[in-house]
Length: 617
Image (cartoon, rainbow, N blue to C red):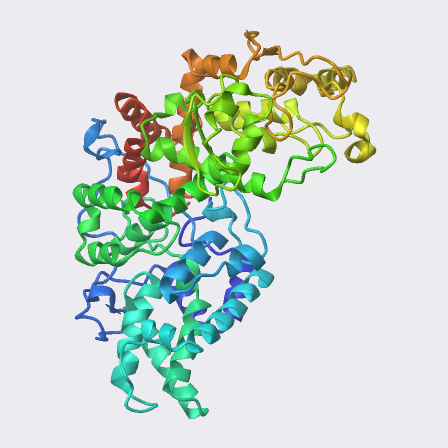
């Protein structure tokens, strides 16, 4: 794994240096470990020596000094006891903002409402755990940097075309095009917000020089400030979440600096830059204490911005992001609409939120009898289900808000009864027991599911998406024929298919049924890899929520929360895994908290791995 001081692979480096922005100086400073000395500035607008940070309260971002968890201290905060043996908190590579983080940050910084990155940029890379916030995989190619550079130009023009937006970031009135006092006020108020830390004196000087050159070339004061904004938005300190080690080669752990910790917390819970309160905690150093971290967690998780965590984390882990974009063959499922896909995606997020903020704990994730429906999804759920029809009869077809229903349908239960899950684990024209079984093993239990071997014939002919006979076929028969092709096909399908076949009473868009279109009665007999049989989703959910399978589910959930929070894969090798002691403590503590989600997330934030780092490899 690369370190935060050897973070930029060659293609990233070329693009950043080619930009002409202040990438080169900052990047070299990060690699040499000489940016930030822990010197305290004298206040916003004040420029000290060449390495003195200014702005955001005038406090320098400490590079490992100050209060904080020491090496070998309790990795999960005060809730549990742990050995004093030295532990390795790991490190995180330099972290480019992904598209979701970029758009949120731009909007909070500039007062906009746009999705320029999510809607137009090259898709972000995704890590092995399925998250797009894994620092190591977020590259910056020449083409990708061109997007950011062009976006900075577009956004700068957009802001300075609006007096209201200009007044948001430029709080003084210049007396002339060369008003130095007003210029410094802008630089040392807006700059620390954009860079999410105090500015260094050489950065301030560079911005002042850019403004002076712009005026010399004929622009007015606002025009010179616009050039600074564009430069900041296309620079490394804005585009990346940068963390520094005083000694880049040293593997000795040190606390993450206050402003860096503020960004870690903010991008975890809100997917955006810190707010005023977090910046104040960083400036005072209070954020390094357990008490302040716990207080900020409580405040931030209660904020509407915490829905960004739900959308990003749960949206990726459980596939809610994919429901609306999944192709559906209209003749196979005439009831499908874009609005139904949107309702399903929102229901998955609301369902996860019920565990984050509601009355259910994670050991009930597969068994909670909860659904969230609007008019469109209520009508679909009511089809072929008298109980669901009765439960949803008060919801008009035109209702766009979501109603929480419990015990809506005896055939549905928990996450595997959600229409979004059932849709995203199906083909466009029929169900896919293989995909449903794979999801259970891979994304719920965290088991390894190998990729299919090369040369395996397709399950269905190429004409399947246009052949009504395929839409109506007995899927159990299709899979049985496929498994007869040989051991290469059978080895995986014998684990995956029997799980998914137990869900065949739900079609490819989540509607309950008892027969296939060809008239065959659905056989919903299913089987887990250990031979345990079941015939309904309710029975499957109960089996997975007890004994060793429940332990698997809970352990994997804690791994997913920790992986996403750290923005890197966990080191869990039985012999050499450096994250294993931390994860074990988190899991032990979680058990005492009866698997409530907020205490788990708080323990991750208090963990040494979240609050500390080191250089080296």
